Length: 244
Image (cartoon, rainbow, N blue to C red; front, side, top):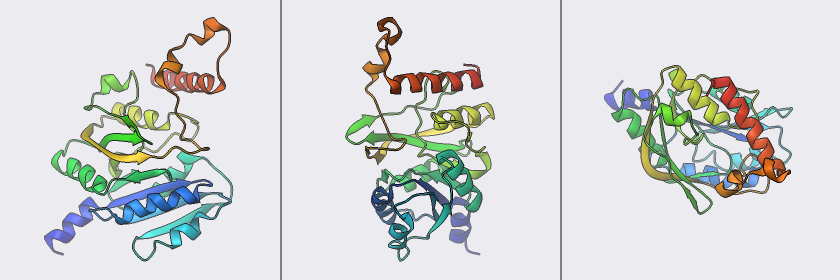
């Protein structure tokens, strides 16, 4: 085996994409993978009991991507889909994309390079766009992570450090993952670039409210929007679980 082959073996990336009724969005996600300057070793779409046949869209890319599809007969949620996909792939590095994520052409290369240069880091992450709104991240700091999440699910993880997602959680699965990894002694490395875009969609887990909405003293007003209530209930679960 040549040195290049050994390097590729050590640095290979598996991409896991849970998809529930977002076959249309999946096309742009997979298209962005065909344009990567660093080719992924595996691309696995987990069809979470969709009704819009994402496998048809994925088939279009088999000519240019090592893509396959596994289907759940019953919907199990994104965390279960991600864990299942991780178990079916083999590459030493993992990255989880939602179907509405579009990577910049150098995203995999930049994240992989960060891990190559930082042997002590267990995952690499970046800033991103939500449609046209910037979501900047920051340098890794476990203490800051206990105050708020600043790392998106779309981060490159060394498989040996991946503990799995908590499948009981409905929100903040990414925050929970990074807190769990930090508790296990894992460290992240920040790539100070906007390496992907999350496209707003009408349904699914990709929802966002402006920060000022969260700062309104809703209990004093005697009413709270449903989304804010669900957000705070989910946040409480994470804080109690990690004692923060």
